[in-house]
Image 1 (cartoon, rainbow, N blue to C red):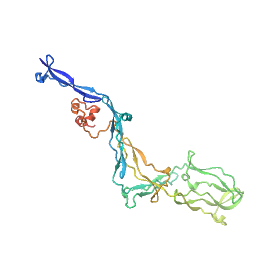
Image 2 (cartoon, helix red, strand yellow):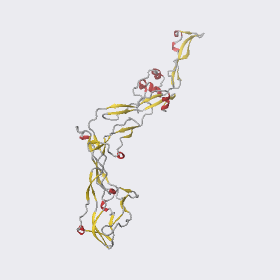
Image 3 (cartoon, rainbow, N blue to C red):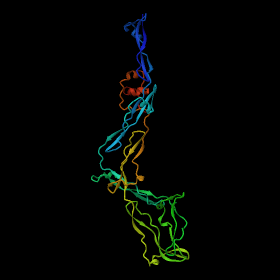
Image 4 (cartoon, helix red, strand yellow):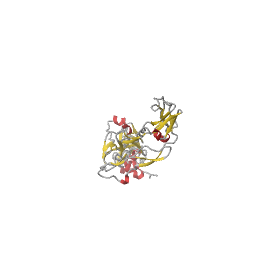
Length: 390
């Protein structure tokens, strides 16, 4: 007389992509008229049938990662985060897509950068660039750099002071002096000079700075000339470079008592040239004003995963004064990329709260936590069934 009948289904639990739809069970009479459930045998009542269902096409959405650390450990800086457009492409397949999809859907893009303020910057150590290694032929030496405190009124922490000297090794000894042919004689005995070019070369033929060759072995670039026999007289070579790159320094040159005997160049003791005053072989020199670049320590990386950016302050000083005279070609970089571990491919979910629009009790009942969407939408409920990390 009475039997259970599966009737229509309730609406899909999801408005897009994969969802669950449950069928209704009613008690009907032999003639098909619905009656109260009490007339049917409760022991034979069928379980509700849960079917997967697919709603309309899912709309794109913006997903934002967590904010990075502040780009400055003190003072004002910036925080960054990654913003991507995501879309459920098919049941169970949620993926990042081109940002144009979210833009065309008139979705407001979350900001990717915001200002942040850490405690006020105290005194910081600032360092200049290392000097060039003075060693030659693979020998050991030390390079130095200036280290200064950014605040003259308060001392910097001596425990964190960067080193101002470190060991260095000179270039290999294969570098050698090479010379050009002598040029024509410029005059008579005592006044005439022949010139040639002297280069320091690497094994591959490249001309390298002279300080990479041994100064004591440098060939002369100027010879006397004019007669087959020429009495001793003072012969001055060209001045060497100033021994400083900025400010006041010293320049030197070789001054010899030289002459020509039987057509051959000959060096004599200084007494042989005693009649005339010996030219000076050392003099003061002044290069451009001493402007130096100084840098502060690097900031934290702007990203917590993937590729981010770290920054530092780069300042130009002349003595204790901030100036603008430093060479822009030698300016240290103020920003560089930093690579951390790869970012997760799934959109972030930090709050781990169930979405109110999702029937998470039903998702648990029909074991939908293994689906990507339900594992996120029902993050809190699905914790209980999530396998522990290996």
